[in-house]
Image (cartoon, helix red, strand yellow):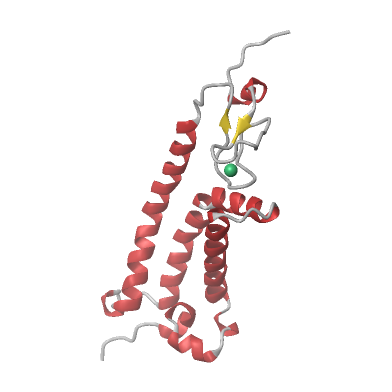
Amino acid sequence: MSHTCTDSLCEIDAGKYTCPMHPEIMEDKPGTCPKCGMALESISVEAEDDNEELDYMSKRFWVSVVLAVPVFIVAMMSDLAPQFLPDMISMSQVQWFEFILATPVVLWAGYPFFIRGYQSIKTWNLNMFTLIAIGVGAAYIYSIVALLAPEIFPALMQTQEGLISGGFNSPTLGS
Ligand SMILES: [Zn+2]
């Protein structure tokens, strides 16, 4: 029996998928290489979804840039030139602002990296996705802890490190 395929799921029975770097990898359905995390390419069908992966990644990239730029600017200002921030804005408000904008960047844009990083650890084929996933994940968890529970950090760090100082560091009003 036969039916016409209109959706991409039907590519499953169209052929096998392999990694451009590891020809020995042979999967029945599209996905990522268990060794290096690269997108698998179709063997039998002309690789139409080459651009799909690129579009998907560049869309995530540009949304991340839009969200990350204000976080970066505010972080720079609060560290280097707190006098340019309006007096009414406290340090903890700055941190919440950064947290709210950074969360979709980390969780949504970073999602494919976390998946591939997890896969690389699980199969013990460490690669660049392992590094990205661990680095971004650790930095993000660190920021959340610093934001929600600054008191668990040593008092010395709280006074020296702006990110941990939380509400203790609000800009003083002009004399
Ligand atoms: Zn591979």
